[in-house]
Image (tube, rainbow, N blue to C red; front, side, top):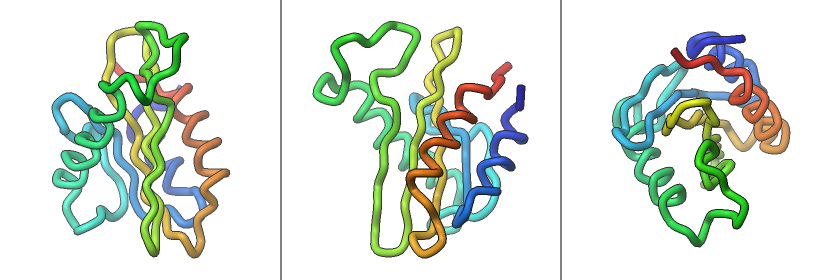
Length: 129
């Protein structure tokens, strides 16, 4: 079971990966980062991504009817722009964690479908503690 650093390094092996982070969406703090950050600052990127994650997680319009207390109401978020994708994958834990993995991919080299699958697998195996 990989820890934060191992998980982020695994994410960086995905085609087109430019940067990755594990972020607490309630505080906006980066718990771990690797690679580049959009705009050059991991902490600013984490805080801004947390705003987006919090918005989706706390509003009922984005949740499913069968949500349980241990799983976040949203599985992942995808934001795209002209040259990249941002994939935010919420991490399910046995305690009330409010964290997500943020992967930044280039459009030219990245494979969004593969990244969603692999990030989901990484989120399931991630050990926080």
